[in-house]
Length: 383
Image (cartoon, rainbow, N blue to C red):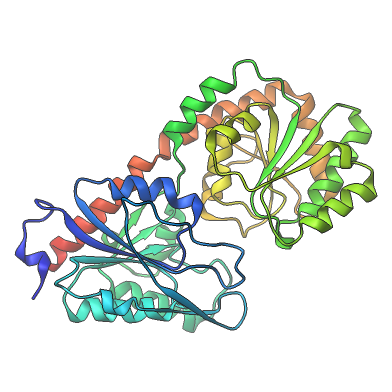
């Protein structure tokens, strides 16, 4: 029995199981929008936390249909994951299609692909498509095979799509949904808060982790203060295991009076007030969705010239929508920070181009549309 065959495509709401290892806070706005689709009847299957517990799932809103699963991890850094309870959800009497996080190390997702195929249910991967680290030919071959078996793949960017098509995979199988935040709401907040703001803040928004290189940011900020003698403040929004080490560093460098630790903040109105008086946003390590948020709020963004950023960085161009500095270089970051402070023309140019990029390519509505189109194509393929 195939439920997709028993109903006109999207005439009634299409029952979709969306499997997520974690329901993170930064996905809430998108999942809310997707859940409100008139074409989809969505059920979330999700686990509670990442392997190191630095990312915890939110409590789903009451209007979501959500089923809590148990995540089990083997080895460190989430090398292998098993989600207890997910496979029993994949039955044709319950759902019409499956969308799952594309990560072959989530073993239950791989089994979910084969179970969906057994019931002739459309199955779509959602994710990077390619490994963020250098992978073996065997691992690459596994990914390619999993894509071939699936009915579609939703990717984060065009770069991954081009890479996979060059591997010989059919272009029509791929759909690109650029990761986004609620840019429409941010645009309204930007208009409310940015008109009369005085710019004196340097801001970082994200988790406080060792790999984020926040010690580099604090050292560069201390150098900027000693050179410019300006009344600046560095605001770190987020929590994490290195927080106390960073606080100690500000004391050691004599800049504790100019550095504030705000903890995790998810309220966009509060964030808007902070962004509105920010001269620049800095990610001293790899950057992801925070880049879209920063540009949406109309603030110049500085990131290192490394190649392990999230897919959001693939759309950014140096000295057009972002200002790059040499990775792991305090002097380079210091120099670029001073350039932003002193060069009003560059600052305005980056803001204008950044906001234009966001308005052309990034919105939650566009993401939802891609998901709907991917499902429609997968159903037609089955039919």
